[in-house]
Amino acid sequence: MLSHVLYWTFPINILVYIILGIVQHAYIYERLDHCPFCTFAAIRNINASHIFHCQHEQCLKVSCLICRKVCPKFQSDYGTDEELAEMDKHFKCAELADDKHIIDQYLESGQKIACPKCGLAGMKDDACTHMTCPTCAQLWRYFCGKKLKIVKKHEMELMVYLIIIIIGIVILMFHRNRSSRLLHEICEKLGKERIDELDRHFNIISTCGFTMEEILDEDLTLIKYPDNINTRRDD
Image (cartoon, rainbow, N blue to C red):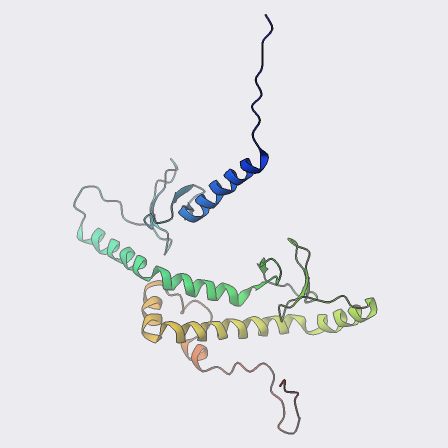
């Protein structure tokens, strides 16, 4: 007897639609959490607790995903005073989590520039500031974040030579100014009282490389023109 094989055909466009729906659902309602102390990771609901129980047999730590520190393991239903006091700190982490995330994003943005086409961000080395995005191949300028028009070869070589001479100091100054400007912006947005509270809990400002005086009062003018030089003004 000949065996019969039944081939079930499914429209490819509907299949792609279903797969995209699954991926979108996972992106909206789930997140990937990593243990701060080992390689273990787990897919969890987007609203899952910030307390993470590692399942790696050589780790098994309980940690806070916000401050990335170890949480106490309760040996019974009633914790000790020290354990309860320690957990109170992590409940405070949850209260401050959204504002901490905003500051973290501002600090990261101060050290990275995004491709104007696809958004891939990174920090430039001490070579030419003309960028070629490895994702979408867009040519763009690192300092202004604008797309780069094609120029003649000799003009490009001259610009590269001149920029390389001073690029190390320029990039350092550029990122310092950008970071300070973003930190000043977030301080005005959240208010000094909230910033102080975040810093007391996470040391997020104390370890950022700027003092509060520098963030609030530093002159962020990039170019200072002499009074006797007329600068172009756009109408």
